[in-house]
Length: 308
Image (cartoon, rainbow, N blue to C red; front, top):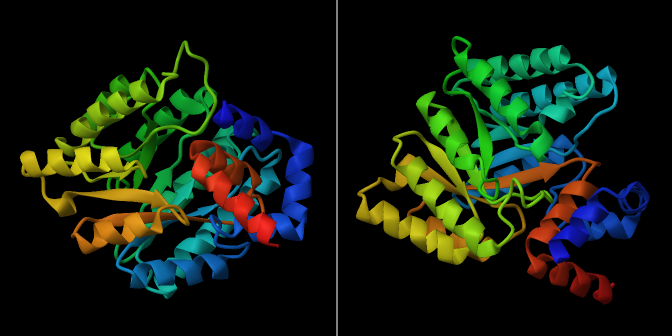
């Protein structure tokens, strides 16, 4: 119920406009968002790198409404890739296809994302573009898009995607992606979906997540296991140890500002950790979905607002 409430708020245009333009909204979002500018993302990434963790940088935004907005988003990502090289950051990028104009012109989105993947592939060392997953209307289009990008010569190690464990279709999608050698970030899922296509109970999602995790770790491909759930993390560690899967053959992934203590603990124990660092002015939908995923996030924000 709480998750559905925050997902609903994430789609409310009036609340969004108020939050993104208000000083209090920007202040409380700072727990989970690096800032508004590329320089903010670089600063946070440098700090995370110094703590022994890699980063995935995301310029927040989705569902652009015209071609110029899409081109502007792509220009920002080109600048991020340049900043990664210029500052020797241990980082890659994460983007949404609707931020690149998928709803406006699919050919334009293909051109923009292909250019970014080509730029990443040409970096020294080679960079990586994670094509993020959105709501279920975009699932198949995203997977088709990534498969096409991955098949392009020179791109094989520079593009991957995301699978959401709460979708009933995900086992087949994982099998198809693994057969093509495509890297996956496994997460639980952050959108409100009908029961006909998604597991509704947390226990069902967790069971499917663990099943998919085992498929990924046994594949021999480098994947990201994205979760803040300590019980699942223990399952991952136990499975990797039991199956003699090397700790440097995959990575845990967590969100900036969430469970920093657990992030640091895993690094101290010798596990790889990547932190997802978002930035940008369009932070409201992302912020609301994070509150819905974990009630403790909402309580943290409320405590800080009452202190103001």
